[in-house]
Length: 68
Image (cartoon, rainbow, N blue to C red; front, side):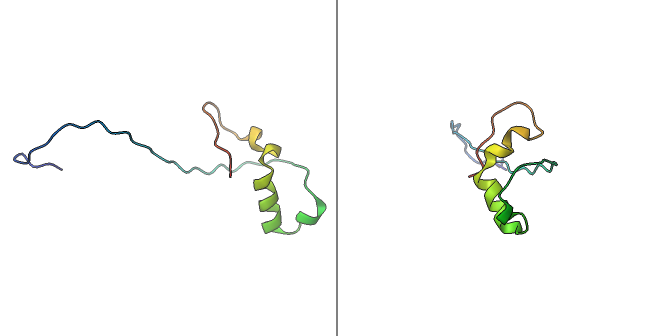
């Protein structure tokens, strides 16, 4: 906060705000058999192949950044 006696000047700045969100939603996708029982491998596979599920995100409007 600026005190009443402090000198100020007006500046124009460019701000960037990054927002992190989490969406939880059920989906059925086809994945290789060898990743099914390994949570880490399945997560990595789905991250690398987001085209399998990204269009099913339950949101509207705007554009989605890629997961990588």
